[in-house]
Length: 275
Length: 169
Image (cartoon, rainbow over all chains, first blue to last red; front, side, top):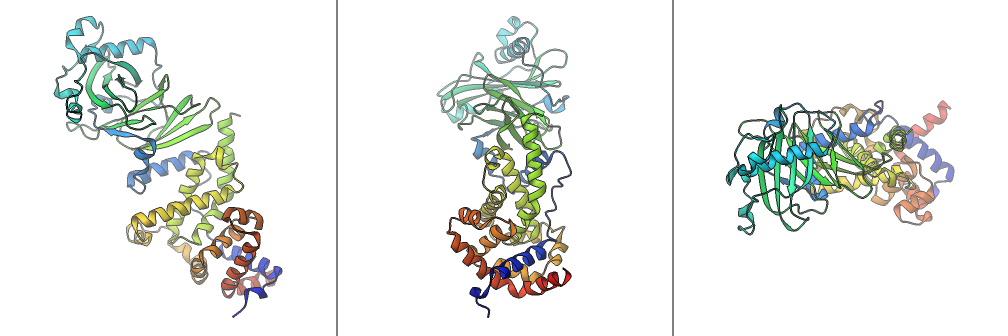
């Protein structure tokens, strides 16, 4: 047997070169670098892997995300757009009025253009009170608006009293914009608004009353982030709505997504798989 | 050009020039090749997630390989022997195994961990002795020792090739 001390520098160079040559036929076969969107391609692959459960645990835990059951109605059937409607005072006003009217039918007459399509009951306001032993009751009026996303014919808004980690009341309000702003689903949750420091809340509607579901996502921006793009399997890369330091987006499927936070120069600051 | 676009094109260049080297580096440890393929993609995806940080790394390719190998170890611990995926996910590129000497691949994978790590960094990723030493946290002299021992172990599979290469040139 040859002793390694017998190898000269020339031998090392020759054998190293031979090893490289022997392994040369091995080439990475995916994804193709010909595309001008390698990163998106990689992101899509990651989403597919997440869906396949290959690295399933990454999403919620890494972002401190909370998956909650949320009745999501008509947005699944509504038109959807990659770009959100601008978050204007008028839009916020319309959505807030509609949600307030749905929450408290007594305020319907005061809500102007808002049209409640269903009257919420205690049951429709969610199941969260049981999780907190009734420490807080479902709200009778809307807390502050903390997130909103309207695109295409539908959208959702989140109203919450709470700071992250504190007992709080949140109201999820799903709206439709077919002609007038109306509420298609309302649910409230009493308890810690979001358990994770990232404050990400993902609701995947799965199948509700036999209808295909939608996903809603809201989270807080990392420091320096000014925009959020979301890569969703099977859909164009979308831009999330932002108010203050919170972003929000819905999409018409229950597939996972990759959330990419960018600074003003377009530099990626954070990328979080969800779903 | 926007910074994001520059960053992306920079990453794409990195991906295009280093993906095969990283894949081969992973093949030295990981079997089947489909698993190495997936890990290579995942390593690059994670590099893209942290590109501002990774691009400043002394060897971004080594970062990708180390990240992918860590993931591989995690999967191994969580899922057991990844070979079982052979029965779940057919390797669509199974013929690639036949492109190289299986005895060489087997010998490479059978090397002691430190020797294999030196081969991966010094030979397959083409890092300098000093870079390899830093990356592996060992002395430069130790890199040389591991390299010679590893090449000695692989020599029986390489001599024919190197002779043929010399004859061709």
